[in-house]
Image (tube, rainbow, N blue to C red; front, side, top):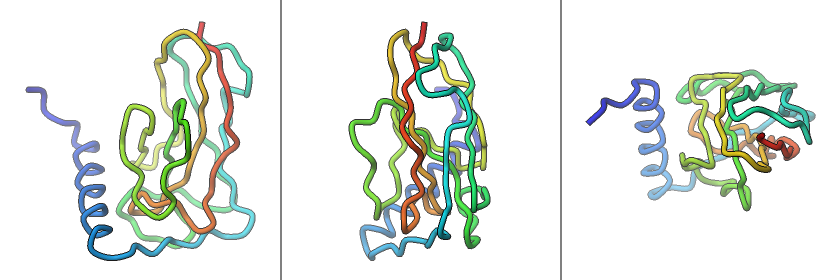
Length: 146
């Protein structure tokens, strides 16, 4: 069995304890400042991209901080890929193939997707992976992978 990446292990541990805490008590959503925005810098909506491409994240009115760091007006990115709906706004966002966590404070990712149309959207999460109040969510974009 291949050992888990240390960063993924830390994010998994934080998510586990966040979910366990949520099962026993209501989790308070962290406030986001008025006018805060998260957005996808690139690729642009409607762009045709190669099988492997870079997604760059933008953030306005807030700062980026790694998961586990409880600092006002900060959060970290979560990328939804072909999501049918947004995640629950009052719980830690679950990690999956369609919901990528960037708990290390990353501001870009190299993605490899199958050919075809794909929808991408960002949600900013607080130190426990919970969307802020009000939620800071990007416009959904569509890319076509050739």
